[in-house]
Length: 360
Image 1 (tube, rainbow, N blue to C red):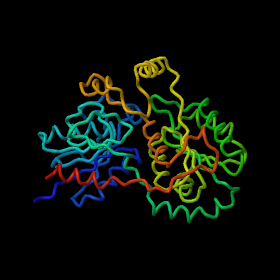
Image 2: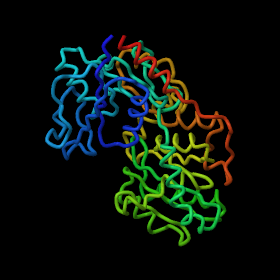
Image 3: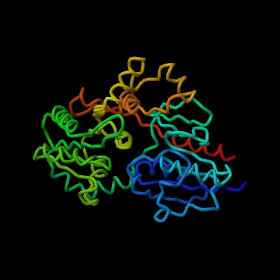
């Protein structure tokens, strides 16, 4: 039987791309990586979700032209729109495996690999996961550990890595939220050792500025996108830090730290300061919705009927990590954080099996 031709259709989010690549490495089929660059309004902004390429900078992207692939592996809103456009150009012949949740066009995706933070209806084209398919690059982590060992060993212990994400609906990471994070880190650590803060692609300037203003003199700060990339301590900290605090919005960092077997505490972010978010959140709670728990029957029914969009609940990830002992809530624990010795499962094999079945 002819092997299917595969495109990896990816964008600019490294954590997303790594999930696609992890599965692609297990597929022994011809593959081409087609990297998309997005037009300026949509580098951070969200385009209207339709099968189209209006949001893609086609001059700077890899070629999106026939012959069309048999199979596309993709992730994220913007690449998924391009994947749907390609499927239409192919006359429906191209099949799409989407990692994550579709904003719309649910049944146009041939397989949806669904991490647990997305409340998707049960369907033949949905494969639910226990955790996202995020894995640290262990070789790169080991190398960073060797390269940084002398630099980090000189710091007072314990070395507590604090990984800072950013605002993502319905959560916020502003100056007030940074103050709360710093207070919790101080309480949990007792002010001992070295705090090594590292921001991310989504950390807004006002949050970075708040860290700069209030960081203790003994702490360290790496500012993503400002400080030189070669000074990024993330992988070295994965190798050498004694424990981690990660803001609850950053699923990729949470899962990578958990898979490394490191002591991990999660700091959930507060809700956005908006009337719409406040009223929606509290109205849903009044009707039986609880973050991190199964949806009430009325919400499951509305999802099946398409009356409400697919929901994202990051606290599902938090609760899963807590139950298995792979993380603890920062507010309830002091360092050293307890950690289960149980291994975090690798679900790539079952994803690969479903893709093989899809293409038979």
